[in-house]
Image 1 (cartoon, rainbow, N blue to C red):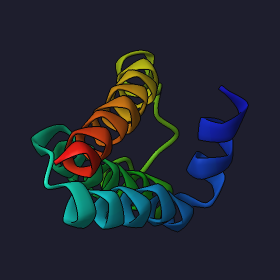
Image 2: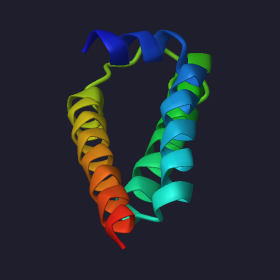
Image 3: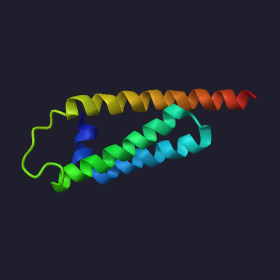
Length: 93
């Protein structure tokens, strides 16, 4: 989870995958891709609030990451495959 660890140090960088998924969603109009874009944007905001101490003023135990990290990875993979599937179907018509 090295990449997601980097995103915890620089939480606003998580808006980059959100922007990429938003661009894919505008192109493909696939609900899964829209969901991935929204979840990545929410994750960026959440990590920013955690990093600045708004949600966790003291040193927190980040057990939430045991769920968030795998969920983000699986959602991203499914959204990428969904966008590829949507693109091929539109190319055929």
